[in-house]
Image (cartoon, rainbow, N blue to C red):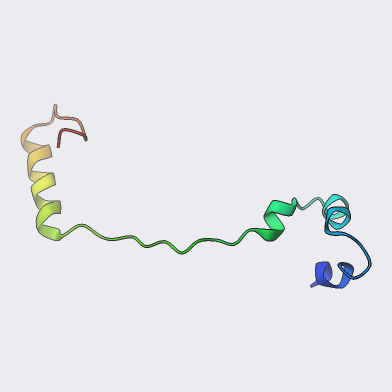
Length: 61
């Protein structure tokens, strides 16, 4: 990677300014997402309530 080669002779701030890549983007590490899915029975109950009561908002359902 070009940035790793340049790090020996230039500071990361200088490399960032020249390349136009923000430092935060260079150091960004995505987090792993732990998504838990709803139980199918609960999902069906929510759908049933929402169809029976169309005026209920998402908080009330």
